[in-house]
Image (cartoon, rainbow, N blue to C red; front, side, top):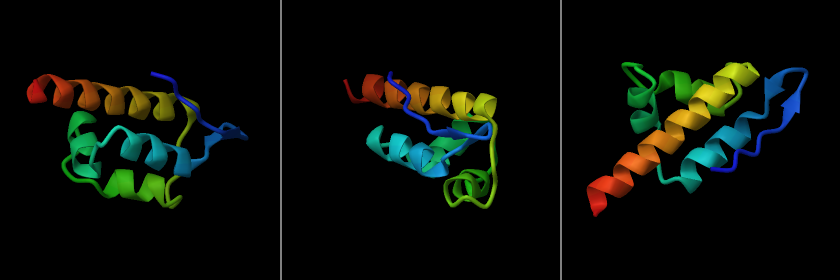
Length: 77
């Protein structure tokens, strides 16, 4: 999976997380669940820019999006 993230002062352009998630057809709730969160408010806050994340957190989110996408593909076979 190609991850295109824009880094500025070690902070991620949150719009890229949303674009990546939507392109993978993953909901905020599915992503939150994969990350072990009880609801999607963290994801929503990240995507809206209310919560800044580090490069490491962005990579973790990107990997979780990829895992959900693969799981959904396997289930649809």
